[in-house]
Image 1: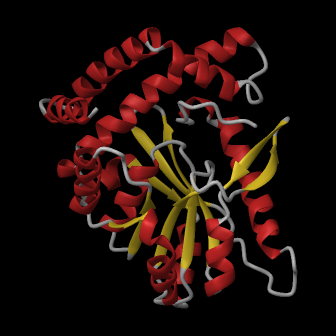
Image 2 (image 1 turned 90 degrees about the vertical axis):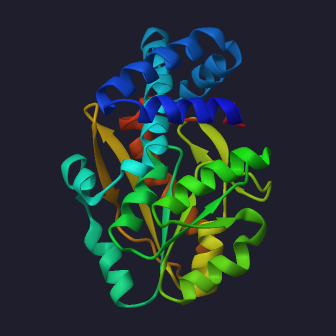
Length: 278
């Protein structure tokens, strides 16, 4: 995969964005038709979201295409500037983040494998927000270094999962921002939550850190609008209630409630290529 990422970066940077997207779409469709395993996993994950099979197949195809666009923009971080952000990214609810920064209480930006979560972190960092992200290391060291180099290129502080607890608590206690993915559990210590008509294991990291530090949880999503534009949305903050013995569970339930709304609205931007539901 490492050499494919290198090739993808070369292609993405070899021409204007409109051409890079066209090439990305070609390879996305190639991936869609040649990888039965990935295609079936996406079909499976979309079942609770999209009832009609014909529509589900149409959306699954778009998942592959949008994922290729996501990677294209990730590969082009060397071109990412404030001018690009002003032209292509709009904001909603940013005042909730500004409030948390001003009060120095820390905020957990809880997102998902939806839209362009990597670009969301890059945008916040380039705008001067003190952001750290917890990232699951890739098994291949070269691939892992490639992804982290791209993130650091735009000023994002990367926290590997092996050092996540201590460093994340430190970041939040300093009143900074911590970005986490909240839709898929990689630690095998998640909490089962009802999700549409199914159940899924939701990571408890955001709730744990909110309990430990008093930081607020802000569901955050960078979603694609039209083809080349994005909207970075910050939902209403979720606070940990210390008087509630089920405070962690309450945070997860509220996050799932918000996430469901976005998955229903943007099912073609949910990038999970492994079977998700229990």
